[in-house]
Image 1 (tube, rainbow, N blue to C red):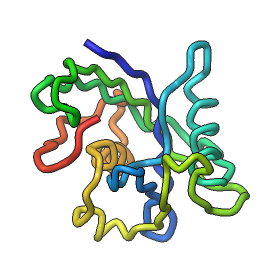
Image 2 (image 1 turned 180 degrees about the vertical axis):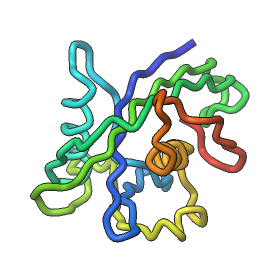
Image 3 (image 1 turned 45 degrees about the vertical axis):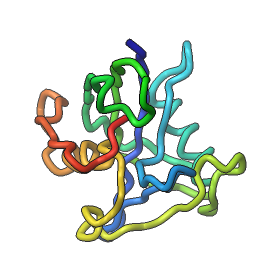
Image 4 (image 1 turned 30 degrees about the vertical axis):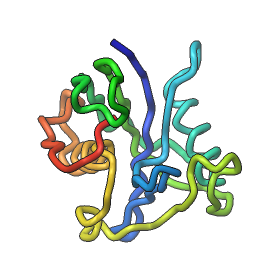
Length: 153
């Protein structure tokens, strides 16, 4: 089984959420892998800067999502079962200029109206992050999010 610890940014302004489109064509939240020895808050700030060109300020921890994706549901056939732990933060942008990632992993950025998110080909990470932002669960654990039709990470 593979394992990944990641930190994700939920940035909402004027009823729109900041999304990044990966080279695969899938929309997601800014964020990614927490490096060995790195604090998750530092990771989300770094990832936002890398993927968007902007500085992020963490406003609060939204919660944690722990999910095991069966091998049969992985994007790449033949991949093993995968355990992803995502730490979600509410952030605001504080400077910089929106631009795609220099290395081409993030190819487009969009302030997407919350009412239009469900029309996108998106990662389940988006739905988890938006649910946490809306519900703000006291225990920080997201209720089960159906991921049928969504890309799972």
